Image (cartoon, rainbow over all chains, first blue to last red; front, side, top):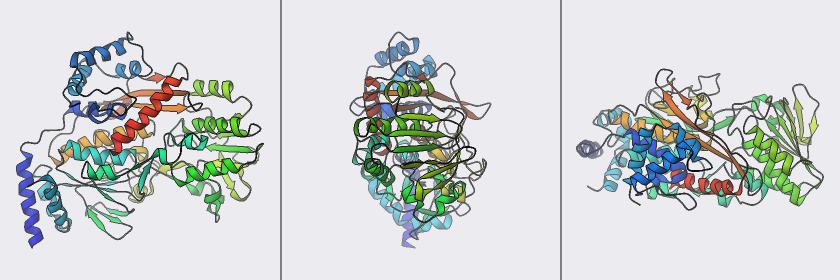
Length: 100
Length: 426
């Protein structure tokens, strides 16, 4: 019984805490797809460019330059073409908003 | 109440959860809901971490994994080549617990009761769940190679296609082989785990032979009609670096193995006796997925809903990684499994919160292959959800191959490994 009470208490608290919980946004999951190479939330391990906390406009310009072929790359010119400019804008803004 | 205390309270209530109270609680919006993840590879470890992150650490996650640490298949061919050790490709599970509050249980899942929503572990414990994420990787269809059932056969003719003790054992076999010997590598019909992996392995073994035992040969027996991945780049590497070492024989399907004599037997061709035989058997979804009745495609792979990775055969059970029936042009790779893990985690969190999962998954695959100890080639692709066809489709015009092998990509390949290991496990 004691366990049950603890459990119900936990549920109540949990539900209360939930009010503040945001929905998992689409851009968050798109950005997560970059983390394989650029680190969770853009905080990269050595040898790869970190994206967290970078200037939004700079990030977007780089992505657009990769996409148009203006900026040479080994792989980013291929991956950036998979996204619309609007999607790249959202992704750049997401990483700009992350803590370094 | 602090988060950690909250989780502990939740743990104390788990006996009650099994009685069905948890479901009612979870509909409150996700907090306190229980997610069990089976399999701590690229798919499962990532899903476990991201369910915690995406739920702001409010959903309880237990990861069931029999191995003490994660050993990476990508980069494992460099252990065969000799420039990396097994320690270099091993990552502990500690940070999933310490940094993300994932409960890591070192055990095997013995069975799943989809009705009662309980996982039974080999060690006897039972884990109730609201949603189960299954990422058991691949298992081998040993019945396609009758000779491998003989005692000791599987310890002698290795696959080393699950990185770990077999990787180390195969390296030892290569070291023990006298110069002038023949290493035979057999490739099963696609789909199999890591399409370019066998061709990279041939390069790495040949690279070792070139330096250490130059009279030795590598013979590739491919059940497929042709090289299944990065054909031009591998052919170029073989011609440039390993012309007198590597021999490629397509349309050679191994149908049996005599492990005692390292002899491969084929459907249509003469037997071949090797000094070291490395056989990649035909693959299918991991045992637990098959046993639970989730392998609805040819009894081999698990069909899933690509918005959520929920299995077509069972509610509340999500399958990801190498076990799934892939979408068009989607490889079975560690990178892809990590991407599945995040899409699945976002959907699981949304569903447990009573919300609609994100409706437009887009993710990429990047796959690096070493052709020498420094030079690397890649293939990449971007995959986007098609709402009409209800599957992931490659985005036309995106993705591609390396123009040529390079040292720069070699550095990126190792940086990729460091980053994906951290993203999945730290």
